[in-house]
Every structure is written in structure tokens, then in C-alpha cells.
Image (cartoon, one colour):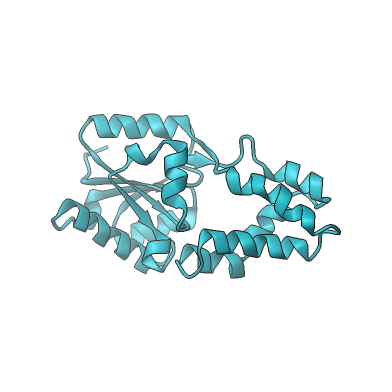
Length: 199
């Protein structure tokens, strides 16, 4: 692979994973909910979209998820007690991606994380110890628009240029994401992009 001016990584599913030690099954068991219900509730578009486009904070999102669960849990008071685990569980790092980032950075390359994230992402990155791996955070919550919208890539590109202090050709940005639609949109924008796969 040729050298690029900027290397951009998606966060969830690429740099961090929520599967190992996921809190959801224990919460669902405690609350008598079917498997997958917590995640399905959290990612309902009317709850998630305002959060990842900066119109609602992480705390407001969390409160809305709890409120939705309280509507169907026989003992609503238990929801907050058990959902605290969900709030505190911010995933785990994907070691092979961390190694790749460390290699890029030791070679003097600029690296960025580009996420459909919440206003809490900076704190999550600190908790996971990965802030040091990136020159900048490109966050949909700051841009007001999320991947795969072309405007999200335009905002991310402008942020990279602002960080570097000069114009950057779109083809000089390399990007990886675990979602096909985000890769397709990045290629359409002009970035060099490849679908993330482990190993």
C-alpha cells in the first residue's frame, strides 16, 4: 500500500468491540427481557439519530433508553439499577487494530478516528486508553451529520485539513470501516477505502 497523508479508522467494530464481556445479556436476564432487546431499544432510529448528530447528549440518550425499557419491565425501578452496567461498559479494544495504529504512528503517519458517535466518545476513548493513538477525533455528533451521508465525509475531510494546516487531496486519505455502506460512501467521496476485517 502506498503512503497516505491521513489514515482514518472507524471506531466501533474496528478499534473497539462491544462483544467481549458485553453487559446486555446479564441486564436482559435480570430484567426479564428477550435477548437483544436492550441493543434494539438503544439503536432505535428515533433514539440514536439525534444522539449521533449532536442534538441529544449521551446522558439524554441513556435516559431515553431507560425510559423506553421502564415501559415494559414489570418493576421499572430495577431498570436504572441494572442499566448502570450498560452505561459503564464502554467496550474493549481490538488488539490487532491498536497494533496497526501504533505501527503507523511510529512511522510518523497521521491517524484519525471517524465515528458515528455521541458527545461522550472523548471520555470513552480516555477510559479505553486509545486517545494517544489518534491525532484527531472526527465525530458525527460534532458535525451534525452521520456516515454514510456525503456531508459527513466532507466535514471529516475539512477537519483533517484544518488539523494538518493545508489542503489534502481526497485520494490521499485512507479509511477503513466495518460497514459496507460507509466504505461505498467514502469511495464515492474520493477516499481510498477498504472494509475492515479481522486477521
